[in-house]
Length: 213
Image 1 (tube, rainbow, N blue to C red):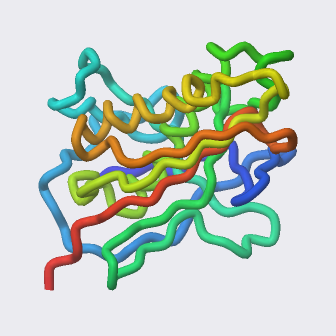
Image 2 (cartoon, rainbow, N blue to C red):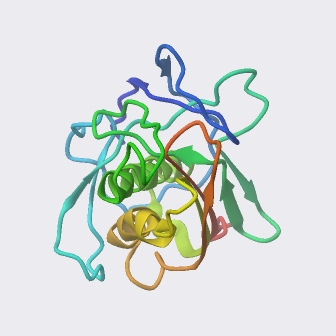
């Protein structure tokens, strides 16, 4: 499968911050058997990663999902972007912050200097970054994702803002577009915070089809 490695915006696992430069992405990945379920990308996306076609069962209009490259951990790199547990067949990701459409960092307070509509775009881009991590760890075979179990979304917001769920909908929608209505919808929690290194921060827990023996 054709891959292209490129520079990308990256962040930390808990309170992610925008690094002054971009670093080359090459995170560790799971060793899996070859699958023909997911076709190779036809070209490099406008964001520097791969292009996914939306899932046939998505309730949204068919579209191409342009992913950014999968990211490396940053800072001291004392964490992983995702960890697979073979006993429970679950894959848990670190937090992925939302970005602008050019992959640059997006940091602001929703309800003050960032509108809910802008924050929703940032959340969608957090979802694209999550999909890039999943695509890399599963060697391009997103059909191995059996179920999104849980999505956590944090929004840096004004004390009077109450629309966190609408912001995180941006991430939920792109997961449904990529994985389908049934697989892409799990439990979810959305809450506001006063201090965060970005406008939006999202993480996932998923059930993944076990490897063939």
